[in-house]
Image (cartoon, rainbow, N blue to C red; front, side, top):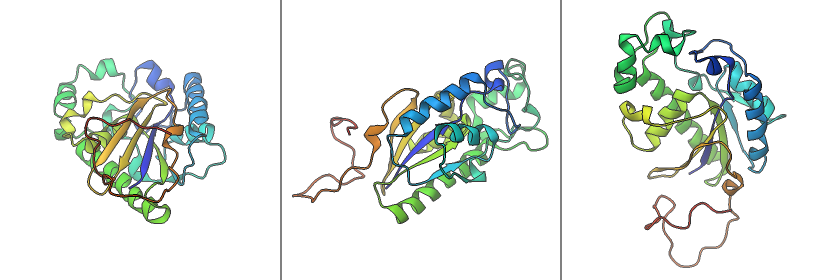
Length: 235
């Protein structure tokens, strides 16, 4: 069991202009730079045992600003979805395409057209596999209370969240993930727990690993949900 902080990169000019950047080498705009620096202040309160990133510049720049000096490992499985011919197009234009309705309502059936076009189900599969792979590796090396970070893209993070919630990919458009936001998932042997979603300003220090205490008597297993909701995440 480990806890992963899923960080979406800061805003880019393509985001601001309503375009679909895809895998193009776009950079953070002024707002995105500010978002990256702001999230860095929040992340400073959490001891991260590993940092993993998409290979795209906007994620790597976000980490350079948020976690200067940190060593980030590139994992190609966290790269943006391959949107094929849709890359670089304005969203308002794409919304007129016949495929748009399928992307909205039945994304598991979508393969984007053209060279480099990827199936959304394939994107989800590789992204979830990457997170679960790193979860196992981090847990084995650093123990069940370890906290690590993965920096990726909106649709990729949404797919990971949908898996953690037990949602079909066709429902993942109901999830919002803003630029510069942090989503927190704790993986356990039985089930994942989504602890934060699309958090753009909350205190992350509550996710510091707890001090290990000698257990007295019986207590719920780490995979158990708190009946009644519990006291919430506390420091």
